[in-house]
Image (cartoon, rainbow, N blue to C red):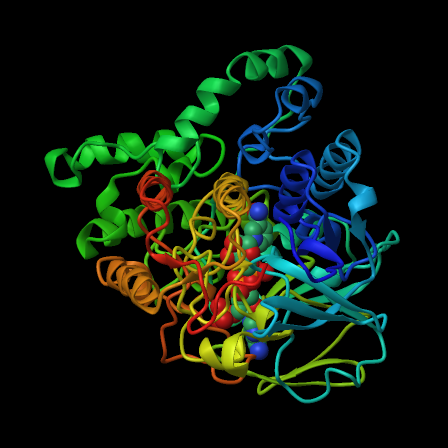
Length: 548
Ligand code: NAP
């Protein structure tokens, strides 16, 4: 770790969310001079920001928590199967306090630029408070969904009532009772909000452009006894998560879709629909993700379930997606969402029939009508995956900006390294094992691999590591190729890089954001890279010896 240069830190981590917290724990445990720079006023990332009513895990709580510390596992009591935001933020604070990590974190520090100094082989960072910092290594723990986007329509600034994006839900208590509330969007976030507030607001109008497939979360409380039982099973729980594609306890049904009768399929689906969590999605037949007919069959089943829960048949039809099949993108899990539409104070506006025209001083105007509100909630999603990277001026060798390099499509090695950007790691970057899995399971894998690589560098007195161009191409081609067998590629969602509110990310161009091979294959691949002595990395920069 020696260097002739006086660096501020050996490692700078950007982001104090789930990934940043674990990464700093690993590094401080090793005695490394590392710090975390966080733009928010406190730690927690997603769980610090998304304070909207109904915000909660769609992973079983005990599969979402960190697995690295027996003490944490033994001491923490998850109160619900799918824990809510306040509790989740308390948990992250509990972990940070337990390992005394807060002293290694700096808040209200928005990183503006991260520029590689080729001569000295170090990174120069500019922070919003005016400071300039140097480090040998930078770890980007920026989160996948941390750049919220509002609709690109006129008038968003004109509205005279209260309005906010769900990601920026006010920290103070918001009283919506008696209020006329409009919510734009029907993604996973809106689906949680609508279910949570329908019976607490005066009047709720939902503006839906395209419906999403939904399935019930079936949440429940976790008693002391149940938590004891969970604690006794933790080894088994994490072993199961490690062998399932999605990093959950839900394992795919190994029977072939075409090897069973329709009655047997329906028996499975009836069972899964009433079970907690993602079972109906992930414990299903594997063909539903790849085979059009299998997918159409489960879609018909879920559509019938929607019709069975929504009183007005015309509303039910509007809530059934027609442009993509069930499960080809992450399924929003709901509580009382469909039943909300049976309430007299909840109204559905179909933007496919009467598109959004503008926001006015008093509310929302569609091509069909003007709607007046006291509050407008934007549940309109994110500039996903690459958005948080694009907002930092990241420059690698030869002044190449990451924004330029990734404009058409991100290209990475294992989702964790980038050719042209030496000594830069992303434990949960695009095309890594995190995005398409139970996020913290993927994060722990990424943080551990990144930390092992750093230890390899330190142990061998190396100061430079960069993915070769060939290695990056091989991985990115592999990620792209896998999309060709997934029906997911046909759905317009953030998984395919779609966002109508961001220039260049509108419909029509798939960007290959996620690795679809599943956790076990991903882990096997990255472990092999390490076991082979990281031969797909170069450890000296071209044309110059590594700095000492
Ligand atoms: P999202 O899935 O991208 O949904 C955004 C919604 O806003 C969509 O319904 C979209 O309609 C609509 N929209 C966007 N711009 C619009 C415009 N200009 N006019 C009208 N409608 C517009 O975002 P999200 O709901 O925040 O969810 C993002 C991801 O976060 C999820 O996929 C999930 O992975 C994660 N999440 C997880 C949980 C959890 O349970 N742990 C909860 C919430 C979110 P279109 O579909 O027509 O574009």
